[in-house]
Length: 377
Image (cartoon, rainbow, N blue to C red):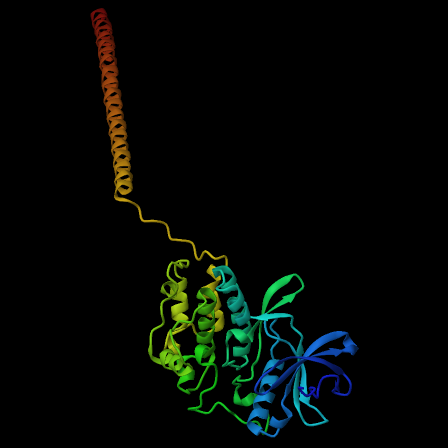
């Protein structure tokens, strides 16, 4: 008969919490469902195995996880309410929000690959949660489908929450006095199927390592398969470092994806960090056009030769008609000017003749008067 768990039924932290049942366990500890009567809510309490509390490296890792998670407030990161050490036996604990649902790995194993829109939408939200962590100098270092929990919140289903910052790397200024920095050069931590090339080589990591791991998760969510064919964890590590990925569109025969999505995933899976998206928000921005499952709008098709010829012919016809109209207008104006000039000339001739006649008559009259005046004298 299995011995009863020593924590079930106990009241912890001065009676604030009553442990109801175990809901999970791992190499470092167990997770329990507990009630918090003072605020009428259920919580999850993660407790480090008492026998490991004296291991300084593991205790430091556990405290680091609690400290890292307590700084994060993004809605897509699991909330941490408190953490500390139990008075009774010195066990370390973290009190978190209680989540109902399943992790992404369970969802893929049960339902198979996800539609493009759903998978991309989940990963965009996870990117946004990690952006907050990265801005605070926190690198997760163990992203995998098991650490993305799909929960129900009100009317929201499959709402993703990032879990388990147990391997998180935090900046030295965030370390408390006496903490151990476990991310030493040459040491490899993480899950082989999802670790970045630099992580597989034991190199110093930054936010771009998490972006690579996220891209592997997205690849698996879209295809139901990993980007390499490997039989052992060591083979996965070797292929992350040196082998090109199987292109997204070739992983499952007959499975097609929106134009450009394979290139987005391939960039996030580049071997060199400098060739990837440089932040989680940049990766999210590249994924956003695919949230509805279709991708960015296609560019307008190039004009055909026939269309171009028709446009050019129309332009030439228009130019010719314009030139003809202009010539007509010029000819009309010229004819009008000539007619006006001729009319002016025809009008001046009779006037000059009349003036000449009048001058002759007046001259004759003056001559007669002059002769008459002379004869009288």
